[in-house]
Image (tube, rainbow, N blue to C red):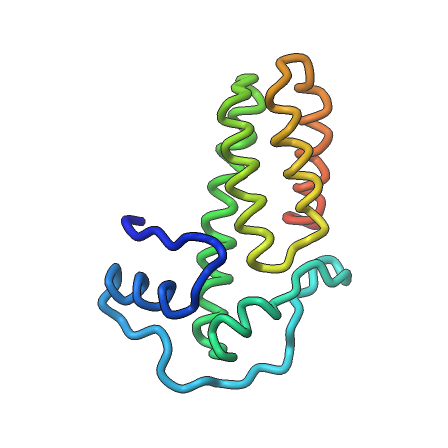
Length: 145
């Protein structure tokens, strides 16, 4: 992506950036959605309140953001697994930081401390065992079953 939107995210900046990059109007008329959480393995782990507010309740936009999130997160988790296998601590730290931020936007707070700890542990070359355990916790939540 060539556009950068700084945190805290300003809705107008976000939509302008999306428009510049795609040429598509993202927000036209708000749609109302009643479900504010996404369930994984019968436990609610995702709170969409932030996205609902940022998109003014636009269901299509929220669905598109969630779809992109899951597709990109699968890729990032694969990169993270490779970095863990290769003991590549700088990449582990970078990916953990990136994913932590993305998860917070979707209200997946249950994994925020996991990624925060993983990011902190990446500064020590003797912590790969702990990082592997944290990675397993992520996969239990992100890929249940």
